[in-house]
Image (cartoon, rainbow, N blue to C red; front, side, top):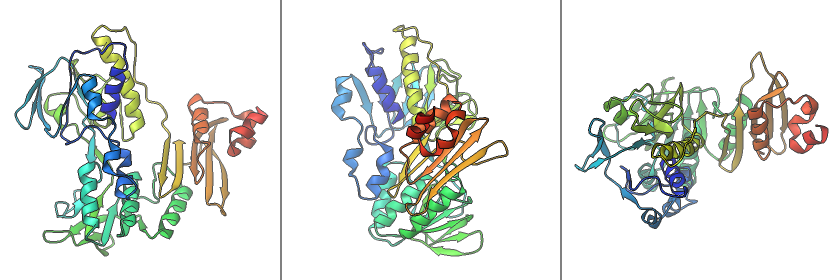
Length: 399
């Protein structure tokens, strides 16, 4: 998705800054909307609807697609990229947008049949095929992907148990109350949820048959989905001699330690930050399009990527969830909490020194963008603090 957004920004310029653009991809199709994989898994979308641009778009803009042929190595000295099928592509500038993969948990039995990640079209197709002939699924991970996988498999008719080692679901996006409200809603839909629980082994001969937990409990399973974090796909950069840490290191211009090679999205690391959401990748794509255009002399740009406070807006099983900034209180913050038990709506605002430091919304999220704006701008809320929890209309009346 991020690579596709970069192409679109380049093609929006008055003149395409490069005479030739080649996209090398290990996947068999052009770029698609990964966010909608969960809708396909749940039966609410067809795979064809995930495609971001038709093949004609690439042809119209003179972009060559080489799909289903993964890159095997990069030769920075010769400025060449080698693919697994023996193709060699030369470059003046190279952009790495290799994304990430489901993190391995290092468990015994991860290689068994029926153990699947949830990252791409192939994963989703495999999950759907297994769900059509099996009944019991265990999902490991209570983050966004794990919850989406659990809900999609439930809608496919499977009996689903979700395991999460944290104290509550979405522990990076929600506070404990929001996490508990989400768990209750999903439990009411039929998903069995176990928090503060970790698997220690996946059991079976050739195919997974059970998950062993850290309390020695066994859960029968025909399918295990591992969705407990991601690992950046930085191996190509590392093997090419680029500076790497947890991912490929880039500067504010998304440039690696090789001035001819750039990286963006989930495979890159800026300062100490790696990225698991699409919005930072989209911001990077806009900056990199300007940088690449400047490199070929089209414009004199001072574009620099600066990480911003990024809100998280999700809808899980039809439940809207929003968070931005700090999500848990500490000794430097005050909390303003509003909750309507009859409608299952909840809001926690975290305030530090008369500015909004964080917001967690559950069940109703329409005021989320306004709260994000107050957090990003460090607005002094003194004049409307008493009405802050009721949203912008009430606050503007006092300001």
